[in-house]
Amino acid sequence: EQVKENDGWIPLETMVKFKRLSALSCDFDTIASSLKDSTLLEVSEDKLKIRRNPSLEVPEFNEERKKELAVRTVYCKGFPKDDTKIESLLDYFHDEHGKVENIQMRKWYDKLDKEWKFKGSVFVLFPSEKLAEEFLKKDEVVYKDEKLIRKWLNDYLEEKRVERKKSKKSGTKDQAENDKNGDHADKENEESEAEEEAELLPKGATLHLTGMTLDSDLSREDLKAKILEGYGDIEFAFIDFSRGQQEAYIRLGNEELAPKVFEKLGAELEIKGNKLTMRVLEGEEEETYLKKALQDKSKRMGRNKMRGKGGQGRGRRGRRGRGGKRGGYGRGDNPRAKRVKTE
Image 1 (cartoon, rainbow, N blue to C red):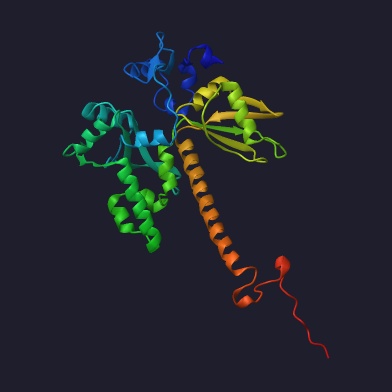
Image 2: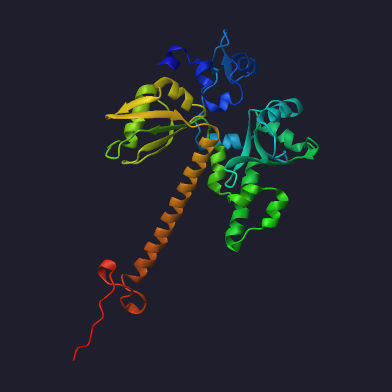
């Protein structure tokens, strides 16, 4: 009830428990000072609490919202892959190109080193489409003596779709071109449409629940009802859970909503006798889950499409093979016994 009772104020003591913020700073004065000019967040007079600006309506992350964000997002490439920090990027854009709403560093997972590495490219969200267009129209943009490649986000995504389509047809990938461009993600993990979609999904919006028993009769609706009961009416994007599973992932429809739900409901929940533990997925862990979830979704859709094609084939041929003869094994998929000739 803390969020509602305190008019949306969340103690910094709670916020610094989350990895994404604590990785930047755990000093309350530093955090409060960095947010003093923010139009999105407010800092309390005692500098111990923050909240979303109540005059700003929380947008739902639906298709309309995705399109609205895309038209003011720019893809930029050419940043050093080593030692580039989000703080230096924020300072660079603020000093050289004015305020931006968000910068997302694009990363790939190195299976050999078992760590996430920066690709050298970012998605930059500008306050308006006009400001994004002005940035793109500049003759050149340089970062540490390196000229940056700049494109509209939608143009970049379309180019990647065309590349994947050509790759599927040829069955091979041009590794030399990948080396030239430095796009190591294409070497180690072939980028899929699902992965790119994951980068655009709202962050700070995923809850992870564990503690379900194998014989539990919990359902998605039970989990949803518990969240609604404890927090109030909110938008759900997807609940990744089936009966019998021992963990669940709940994706909410709005950015940074998961910490608020966690703050209000707490880490321990009890549903139908199941004592569950809840936490917020953050940073790279959330990004990894989102990519995997969308890749699994893409695979399921592919399998469903293949089933549809297979069903049509069986409908044309019936239960027999070519020429009307029964092919393969008989019922039960067991081989027929050979008829032995006896004297």
